[in-house]
Image (tube, rainbow, N blue to C red; front, side, top):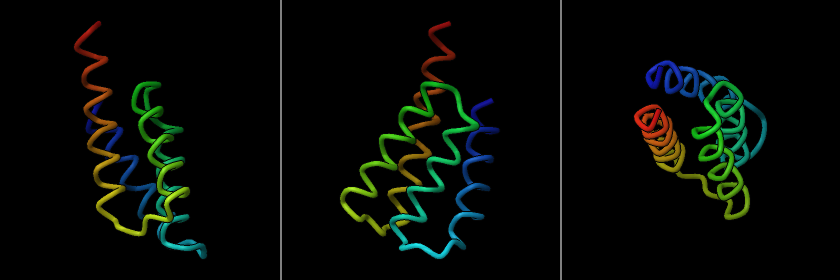
Length: 82
């Protein structure tokens, strides 16, 4: 399940990266899109990181990758607690 979330998130990022906004806005939008397909735990991480990218105008693609990794970890942690 974790890999499916990350694949969906990566796909959403690839599609949104072609958007017409700033790099920061495109990255944030991709994370918001990925959050829609994620577990609540992962979605929370992705949405928070999207807000931070917008607020701080972060254009570094590593911020998206880090958010996806953190979301995967949050999702895996939630699955392990069940």
